[in-house]
Image 1 (tube, rainbow, N blue to C red):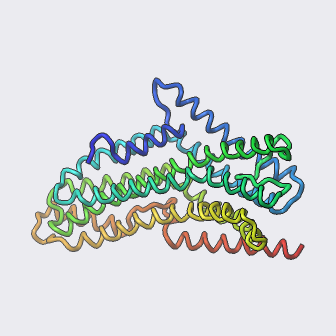
Image 2: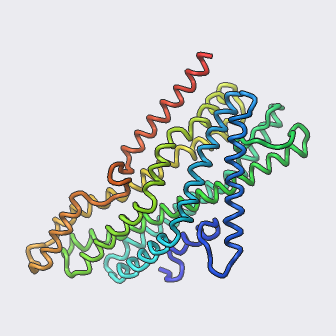
Image 3: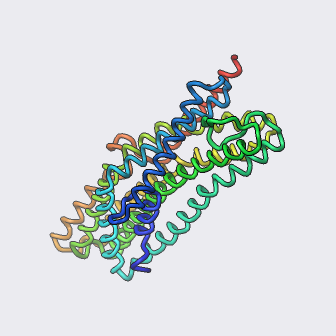
Length: 373
């Protein structure tokens, strides 16, 4: 395990290069933040322009609404990170400190190593998936426009372009412009998901170490009890900083895939080559709430297993002080802190099922609306 390159430091670097973390003494980080925010707001303004002053085409209107939803929750994430930068830095410091302490347990450190190995592969795979989207989408859309000779260019995001795109060079300029806009959204969202993955699987590895300790020897010293409290505090801090943002994304996640899904259905019926681009977009849109709920489910599962592990150790062999600490752990784990919004909405598989039902309902409503017309 490298002491210099840890998952938390990798996450910090992603946030820095996305412009979501400022760097003291480096003014270019402020310029980077300003650039990405300008590009992000250009998406929002361009999509709103299409919605309010478009030509009334239903498919373009619905796609512009999807682009607006993407802009809103991506912008909310950026503002959230920039607003809570100091708190997030403290959260990272606490994670690093707890990681260092738990890695001193030679017998159980493999739980953290395995979790971080999987985390690295997951982060790499998701980053490749997201960051390849602008180039793949650009290629598919240009190919589709060439094959179909469509009068309306297929843009990555349905935004207003301030020039006529009928000629080749203006057309190419418009396609590249929307591609540059999409890169900012991909950078922001990839950094955010890497942050969520890092928190989830670091905590998952920490909890597994505590599970192994409790099942093998019970609470052998006060450090086990202290580490359990530290994990609970980290989860509480994470909820205080990001649970509102996560809840907001869950609320809009039923709307976000509708534009891409509706257009995908129409394109499939026409056997339009753009169906591959829309399939890519629909997959990414649906994966957003799925990732949040899966991360919450992973933490919830590990906390439940920790509760079970607290009953398996030889508690009867311990001193009264350690028995008292173990009893406290059991009480706290009866209803443990998980990834949730004020403990009212827990992000888990049941939550994603509700989102999926909402997506289906909205798609059916849009389809029925068009058929009635």
